[in-house]
Length: 160
Image (cartoon, rainbow, N blue to C red; front, side):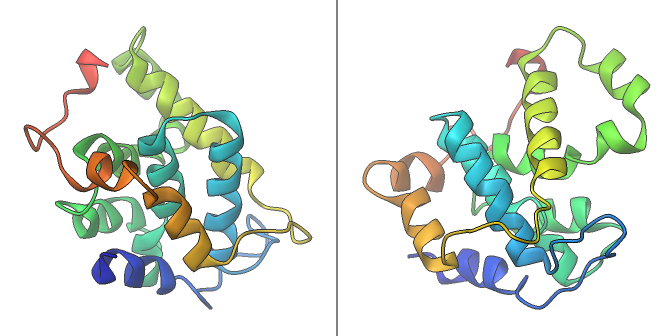
């Protein structure tokens, strides 16, 4: 297990969010809900990873958590997952520009999926996995090799 990666996830425990936008409570509970939604929607473990770790930056700085989180995840997750974390708020901040910039790409489709899961994962009564179980499920078997290493270390969203 990558202790650094798991500690980033565990660091969300008790990080409170605005009840107006996040009635479900802390950032860990929210992230586990988003992860569960991703697991039900796709078999793509890179998307699962982006869903589980999308808010890790909130443990350091809420307003810039997308950038902070991506910086923390560099080298720990595939570049595609890091890119999704870095851009997961783009459709909220500037939807027109984001849609125009990534029109017709898989990157836009993936950002839309992550955004949908992020918005939907806000149920105060949801049942979620234990963080260790979620982490273990993400990295079980061959997925560990898939997620731990990038062939080139970079990701070009225009090629997706």
